[in-house]
Image 1: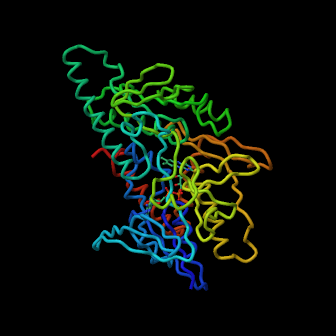
Image 2: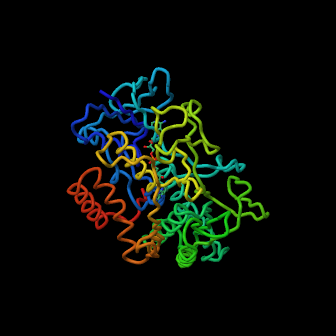
Image 3: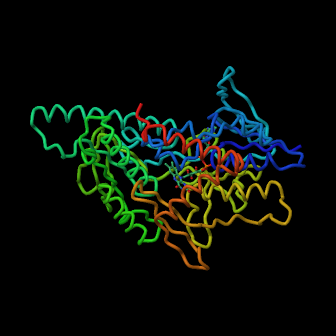
Length: 435
Ligand SMILES: Cc1cc2nc3c(=O)[nH]c(=O)nc-3n(C[C@H](O)[C@H](O)[C@H](O)COP(=O)(O)OP(=O)(O)OC[C@H]3O[C@@H](n4cnc5c(N)ncnc54)[C@H](O)[C@@H]3O)c2cc1C
């Protein structure tokens, strides 16, 4: 019996474990290892950070998924690989049992432990910026953001009593570094949250614009990877929401309450979020394998590590060139899912389906700009032509991306149950998780 160990149960790893576990008739043992007991769809983290969704309503429990899909789950942190002995060393983090260590034997190992924020060595960035790599970090951001709004509202009331300040002047500055989809979606969600705090009188803020949200982007435009017309539309939508955008602005240094740029400007910042790139995590296992300068594991076109063909890597933690475009495959959920599908075929030798090499196909990108709607581009949607989308159709497509993902794990009935439960909650609960 072949043992396949999957290290990391995120977008790529959980999908592969679920599909392999459900595949009948093979003498195969599938073991998924993850440091968290639950799985969360990372592209929703900005909404957790803004308090617009409660992550506990979106979790997939990995122990339940394992039993229902026919794989084994080990809850623990991977701390090393012994390639000679073909074992993965795990520091167990079992919620209902004593912690300890374990050594998990593999015949094939698939690494899919994602990525962390890349601060590119900018002084002060790691120390002072918040980032959104996990649910814990997004929840920590939410707390700090709400506390900052409450404290600012309290200060405003004092100023007003003393007649010292223009009631509409910005009092709280939030800076987001990076104008990719994450930065843009976070800015729009934060504006939505501040609007709600004002509407429900949950802080002393009198007007939403008292919280100033700025996006700083090194490049000349937002959403650099997308069509320029989509970038222009994003700018219009963000300006409607009162988000300030500074392009061609490279951050030189981050302090506790300000951001300094290379051209000498200083932006006040009570909170700074870094959303400007990712790198492979600093795991003790990576020294055993060749990595690129972003610490991502180098793989060949069959997603095998270049040092050891029994070890594969997929998702954000791996690095592979798209030969026809001469660009690296981007770290995205879309790429992670395609790589997981490829490895499923490769590892099961699916009849007639096995492709000799992995080819990434970019289907396009959708970005939601809060209340201002969803925009995006679908690549080669009509023959070879690209299609720009916006409005209700784009919003439905954006939501369906997540629902289809959930359906692939829990089936259509439970997916519909989850949708209904979320709709009911949205009618009963506050629009913002504020306590
Ligand atoms: C805020 C945000 C918004 C995004 N929006 C989009 C979007 O709109 N569209 C899009 O395509 N992509 C988006 N992405 C990117 C997308 O989420 C990632 O590319 C995708 O999740 C990568 O999948 P993965 O399986 O490689 O890693 P992940 O999904 O990050 O999973 C990694 C897993 O490994 C586990 N792990 C890590 N280290 C260890 C360890 N040492 N031991 C055990 N387990 C470990 C983690 O707990 C996690 O479960 C977004 C990302 C963020 C942060």
